[in-house]
Image (cartoon, rainbow, N blue to C red; front, side):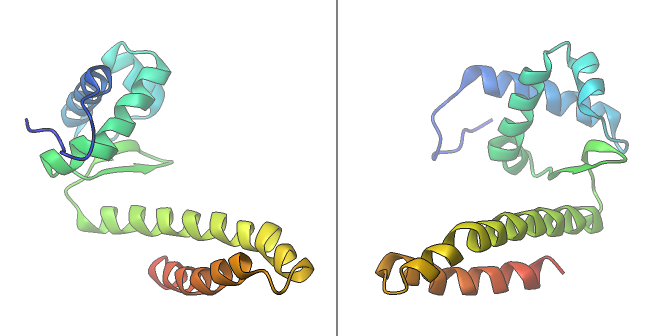
Length: 139
């Protein structure tokens, strides 16, 4: 299994990711919640989470197995593109929510108090496009 050239090797993360991947593959087509992954892998919860992060960062792309999460099913490898799209849209909606809160809670007051601030104007102009794109993609 080739490593991604972008990231340095992290043997423990890779090991945890492999254990989580195997557990999820064995559970297919069902998913596993974190508690079930802890039981299946005999890892601690923090190690399972580290393994999931590794899968998302490296392992899923290497193995061409998108990892998704749903409240009902937990983490899973689905072969259904509709599941991937649903997950991607929810992630984009979350990113939009975080960005919107940053704009309304920090950037808008910054612009109101310092309307000539070049940094705030630049960020506002750039984020207008980003928020519009995220809003469109998360529909």
